[in-house]
Image 1 (tube, protein in one colour):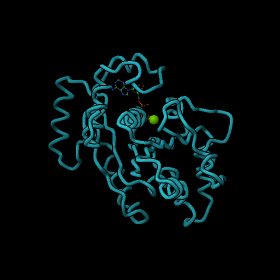
Image 2 (cartoon, protein in one colour):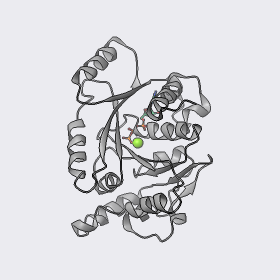
Image 3 (cartoon, protein in one colour):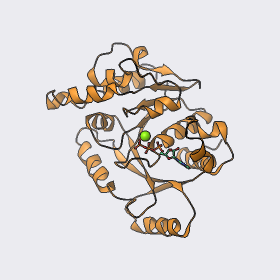
Length: 256
Ligand SMILES: Nc1ncnc2c1ncn2[C@@H]1O[C@H](COP(=O)(O)OP(=O)(O)OP(=O)(O)O)[C@@H](O)[C@H]1O
Ligand SMILES: [Mg+2]
């Protein structure tokens, strides 16, 4: 199982939308995907129709250690082969409680599940983690089980703001997870205006970060943000759906 964290300190750069659609495209290629919603907003859980505002969220249980069996924390979605560990606001309390623990007990909380899913039956091919726009202890726990970090960026004058902090954090986290590395940036919500085209060129020239792909802006996505499901399901021909398809084909080397 390969574990991928979607991470950027900036809000609204399509982290969740990328997690939703990357998982869906992997699923369309026959891969088994486990999703970890690591954001108390629970947007990934909402996108896959499993958001529950009432009970302590499975991801909060992972963080607090209050679970026995993987079946308690992993749920199936409507798509066979996409499962999810959901989040809600209870993740905030669980993260806060963790700050009171001894340092050495703070970072291995997701490892138990990772070991379980990797070891017991090797069922999942990918684990995709959607992160919030900050680096709290829940994100540090995600980095402890992550192989690759993908950073979605929106092209604007401060597109790369905070990226050096993400890169630094990754370097630090290598102390407890040597597999971890920054795979590259994924340009999102891209509009082919003169300004954004120039921004893209500039980003390419920076040379510091591998550009993994470009996801086009689609009016269909903007108009249907209440839809909260994979874009391919309601607008398979639009630019955003086609871009995620292309990105995942390049990422896996497997077309659909
Ligand atoms: N390709 C696209 N075309 C048009 N709109 C898009 C596209 N990708 C994402 N959006 C819209 O941008 C908004 C932000 O996306 P998303 O919630 O995925 O960002 P985020 O980085 O996860 O935000 P947060 O930091 O709050 O978690 C959403 O309303 C989404 O519908
Ligand atoms: Mg999000």
